[in-house]
Length: 374
Ligand SMILES: [Mg+2]
Image (cartoon, rainbow, N blue to C red; front, top):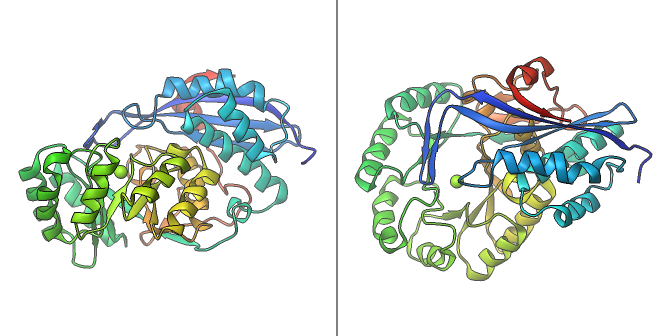
């Protein structure tokens, strides 16, 4: 309990141009990143920020998440004690189904407020610092592979050593050709990872993945559609390369099923899928108890939610495979943070400031806002 109360809920729908098309097994991302930015005001004068980053073919829609915050969660938040995060999350689940991105935005704004009130970073509210730097992965997803290879070389010069290539959108032969080019282009000390985003059909997946294994990827992510969890378990048993579940695990309950079926070796944990940092830590704990390691995945986020994800990973031993928080730095034409999202020498560096440790550039927020709901 605290003597602070939420007095204002402002919801901004933003459209920020992106630098290139990114193709995935489930569809293309192009034009603009469409986000829902949340600002919570309090009677203590402390402001908390959140970011919901939906993608219609993956987690949900901007419209549903904006409505979740503006129409359904506003009455819960106005007058609430921001310190009662777990209670508010439970009430949010009883108020509106799904909309995990909106709930993640709500949770990060609440924890931002608590951290600022207690003058401590959010990671100290989540168990304390396990790691102060998180290796950053960039996703090779541009259908113009030559453009991405040039960018990958530049990122390698910047110190980045993790590259995840998106496959499963242009056919198996094309995937093999793209992988050959990538392996030839990026230096030996760079790690290669592969993400199908559900782009393979289960009936031919094992034979094709055996071809892919010759490139020695660190892991192969979500080769087949999320619903086929038993088939994913078969693939995991048949293939030597570690298999990662992404779309197949949204919630802690999904993580229990993953463990029960031994359906994957690894899991991608995203605050947008599960509804925040606390749920993400639950997934990491369930997976960790079964020897399954976690990876810090993300959606098409701004620096605000990247930072929430970074605080979660900083305080969670079992999210040990790095993160893919590259969009704020390398994909959006402009981010919303006043100070650039902190990437140094290929790693995300945790800030020392209170709360999320960020300042939102409100002029830039206004510039990219297409609708305000308050
Ligand atoms: Mg993925």
